[in-house]
Length: 79
Figure 1: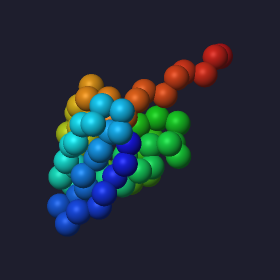
Figure 2: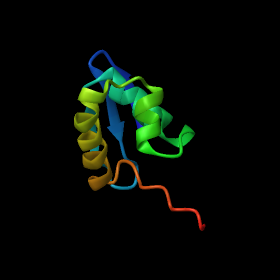
Figure 3: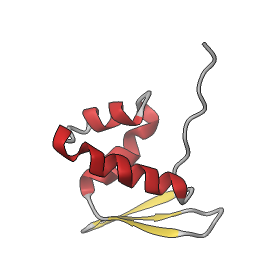
Figure 4: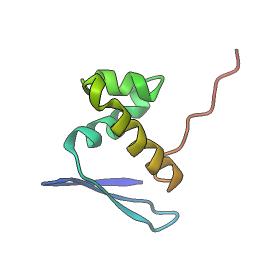
């Protein structure tokens, strides 16, 4: 997956599926860019200072990206 910054947010391209998506928020771009740095998506939202009232919108956007295989759920580590 590659992100290309754009004035509106970013274009996301998946090399395996050849799908192209649009991230229409610079904050969402930051969240996606920092997902690997945080243990959970919620932690990434907190780190990017997404207001609590807006988090459901961002969670839905992340779920949509996961459904389209742009991002993947991190495997759970054994307890």
